[in-house]
Every structure is written in C-alpha cells, then in structure tokens.
Length: 279
Image (cartoon, rainbow, N blue to C red; front, side):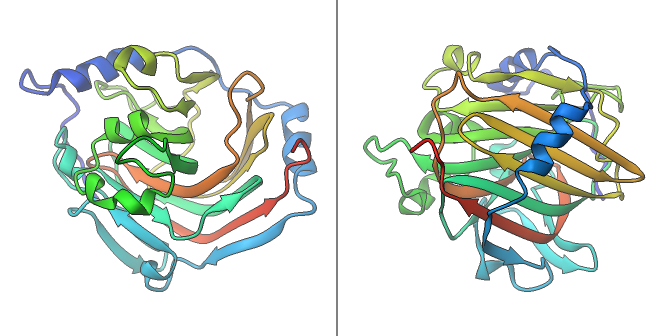
C-alpha cells in the first residue's frame, strides 16, 4: 500500500492546479427504488463477450499504457498499481481491453482498493475510440506509442468515450470522507471545453470504496442512461446518470485508469453487450 502526501506543492504543474479547481462538488448521493429497478431491469438479454478471473496473465485480455505501472496476480485478483510519484505524468497507468465492444454494455467486476490515498482518482473508460484526427486513429491500438507517457490530456483531447471517476478524491485534499463519483463525455480540445464535459449529478461523500474492502461493481450503459450498482461491506447502493443530452457512445474499448499513486485489485471481470434498439 502507498500513503503519499496530500498537500499540493508550489512546484506542481499549472495544469493540475486547473484540474483541482474544476473538480468541485455539485451533487449528493442518491439511493432510491427507481434507480435500483433500472439496474435490475437491465440484467436480461445480455451476451457475455469477455471474462477474466483476474488470476491469470493480464496480457491475454489487456494491454497497458504507462511504463511504470506494476501488475501482480493475488488472491484479490489483478493488483494494478500506477507509479508512486504524485504529479508526474509518467506515473499514470491505463489497462485497455484488447477487444472492442459495440452496442449497450454491462461491465461487472469485484474491486478492492489497495491504497490509502485521499487524493487522485480511479477511472473507468467506457467504449473508447480515437477521434479519427491525424495521429489519433479510431483504433486506439494504432497510437499506443503516443500514450507511453499517459498524460490525462492525451485522452480527453483525442478520444471519444465516457469517463467515470470513482474511489475518487480531489487532487488537493485533507479530508478522507471527501470522495466522489462523477462522469464526463470526451473529447474536449481545450481546458475550457473540458469544463463542459461533466454530466450531472456528481455523487459526493459516498462512504464507499474503503481500503481493503471488496465491492462488486456493475455498470450498465445505454444510449440514454448510465447506472451503477455497488454491493459490499453490508451495503447496496445505486447511482444513475441521464445521458440523453450527450452524444451517444456506441463502440470501443474498456479502460481501467489509475492516476499516479493509486492502486486497486480487480477480480471476476465480465463484459456483456446487447444491440442498441435505438439504431
């Protein structure tokens, strides 16, 4: 486990100061029967496309952005750790599925946080493709070299995807209860445009994703909605986001991103798809 300093140093890059200002509170945690019913109703007619126990060589199903990440296989599953140095882009890391997934998608896995950080973010990338601009082919495996140093701006400027921050804390933070779950829709060519990528609500102070505790996460993404079920530590929580105002994301790879200093284990990973009825 890592436990790094939580205070911003004066030498830290201006870009990360801007991100810290952008990542403010704008909502509260919800848990209601309507959200619960939506998640459960999405459980039929799915086709299993990828299954990974997390106990075998990750390279069978994934490829890695970031040369300083560490991956081990433990009794908790695939233990994935970003680099240890805060605010150094080379210490970010992303695992991408080798397979691409089209249509509605359901993603399920057991998640155990291995760090005790109260800064920085875990991210799920849903159905990522490149923008198609020169150098950023829709097939992101065609420009892996550009992500050897996996700076976050390379992703939000040059990819179409849904971004979910969870087990997440502001980059400047001293409060261990100040976590959040938040989603964004990429791309955004500038920092100013990045401000507009968030899709409300932001769920604050969830009390979930505690270090060393295993949770089962189930994400269901359709054109109209993203839902999350979290089960573990004696709790069941349900969250949802209305996607109807955003351009739909309909195909691409799934990514697991850890910002510098963050680490977690993943086990019993399953990815399902079904054709979108709105096509």
